[in-house]
Amino acid sequence: MRKARTWGGGLLLAGCVLVRSAAAVVSGDIYGPGSTQIPIASVPLAGEGSAATLGAWFATVLARDLELSGYFKPIDPGSFPERPATTALTAETTDFAAWSATGAQNLVKGAVTANDGRAVLEARMFDVPSRTEVGAVGRRFDGPVSDVPRMAHRMADAILEYLTGERGPFDSRILFTSRRGGPLKDVYLFDFDGDAPVRLTNERAIVVSPRWHPSGDEFLFVSYRRHLPQLYRMALSTRAVRNAVTGHAAILDGVWSPDGSKLLVAREVSGNPDIYLVDSAGKPLKRLTDHWGVDVSPTWAPDGRRFAFCSARSGSPQIYVMGIDGTGLRRLSFHGNYNSSPSWA
Image 1 (cartoon, rainbow, N blue to C red):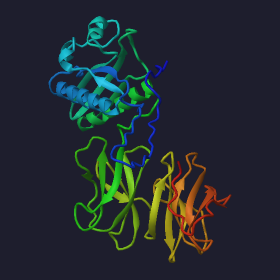
Image 2: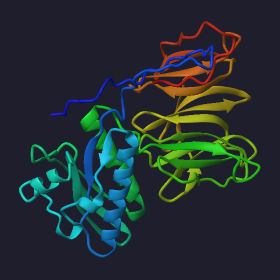
Image 3: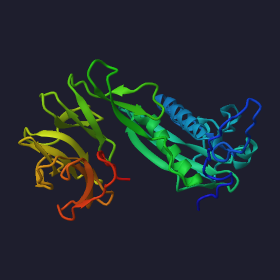
């Protein structure tokens, strides 16, 4: 059962105040993150050798994430009654009386092993007052040791969602293009707690429109490396780049379907862009639009059965929607002379 929230209203309300005099005083109450904080202990995960370092790293990142949320107050590790080498991993063997004395309402602990550059990590959360394990939050992770911070982010997301009903932002990653590496743009990755963005591409050409794969393991981008726009895909694990669409036609944009099995692309033929459906191997399956007006910027509906796009078929760029089978064309925007770049919530 999800625990009820005990703090004030969930929305932060802001108002605009015009100060007419230096003597004017505006006061009010703010409710939301920070008004009440849940004391929580993030214990270094039990492990031997290098794994112990990973366990401490996990606990530090987790505590920092939870503190940043404003909903939690991490307990000082100096007051922990357990140490990683003696950590009990079940409710039956946990000294809840000792943990209660620290003020902790929730407790996170677990174990980690490391071998050949990979970490296998198990983390569990316990409710101290009820002396029970919260099974819905427990997680097991297996991945490169470099992913330990991301494992902690995912654990923080699970904890925040369980205790507050709000999905956490800690595993968020942002793709963007920037000229910070030189005169031409490349794709960069920024993690939630990253000190600096990581450069992913080195195209020595114009690069635009990075798009995540639903798995978060790879992304699409458009590059002008061959002096015309073409769509490429990169796997984050290997940084390997390959064509996302077969052939040599210009591809202005591309986006994955919600299940990652297909793509919608804006493909230019004889100088006129239209929307095409493409399989995961890059083979065009179907031409969905066929009009003299420019058709670009496709975006999938969450159900995977429809898509929105921008078209100039009415004389100016407007937003349209169509079924993925090419039927049911409907214009959505009628106000404004230039409506583009739709994004489906």
